[in-house]
Image 1 (cartoon, rainbow, N blue to C red):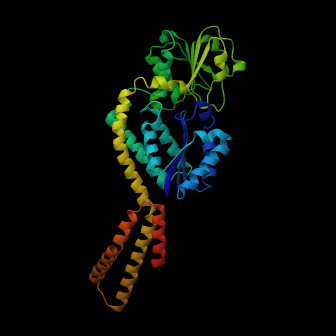
Image 2 (image 1 turned 120 degrees about the vertical axis):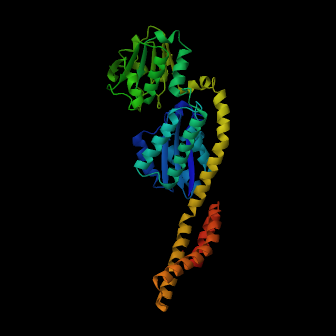
Image 3 (image 1 turned 90 degrees about the vertical axis):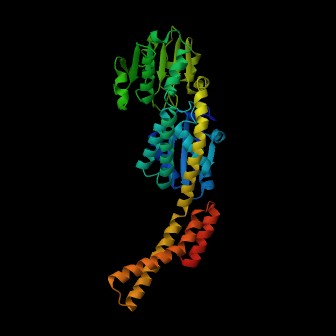
Length: 413
């Protein structure tokens, strides 16, 4: 078995491409069902505002990666998608998972949200049965390592996240943020974090827009919605002229503010679109007094205070490589588990048959039978110990296949 990943992420793909290749939960189920019909045994899909990635386990990785590539192009109906795909397999794929989990592959190095998103992606795949022995192991090891590094280096001690950077980005572009009237659309984790950082900046006049007054499901986020005004989603156009700034972070699969319905804005207005796919019609920036920004505009500001984190990131990468090698070794050993189990089963069968023959020929008491059983098993274990060690040291698929065929011919296992 091998591990691989196909990624569409912020490093190579612009927001216009990333918003097309977004997986909702419904699309994840559809995609996973179809992928499991191909040369693929396990699938986990991670989809955030900065990436959509398909992680797979397959015994024929080269063929599987091509199949996933063709599937994505066909599924999202975008031929040029191939230009933005990044493919990795085996140790490079494992390393990628580790870097994503800890936030070393994010726009904001060490960002807080990505680890939770990785965890949710794995749990979703496990619930529908598409992540099993290999991806479960790799993802769990990556998440454990990420938690350890975040704790040891306190890489997330300062709240550098997409919502934090978004608020900072807006603050740098408006006069006196705390006296602005702000509309926050969406009450998920992103919206709740925006509220948290706005309140930390001293903003008092905040309106929250959602389909209901439901709050972020995270317990530690519940109180952040106190002392804000609420409007229903259906009223989102009516309040536009009353606000100075809009932060939008919904999970809507379509644009929620369209240019042809947007009213004429009489004062300067800044809109920060954090959603993927985008909430805001980019053509709104053509309107007088309106500026529209999205997550791709955050890259420059994200680098301003990153020197320390980049230094920490380099230190983490050394330990990361060691962990990647351990996980890669585990996968190599796991590849030959069925062969080893067959050898062990053969050993146990020979031991039983030998003991049965001796017992029929000789009248043994209980003590003698136990002693003889231990002696036979010990001798046969020594016999299979060397080939098992040799099997565990194999790395190449061709070698594993050759050993398997040889053992089949010699021992019929």
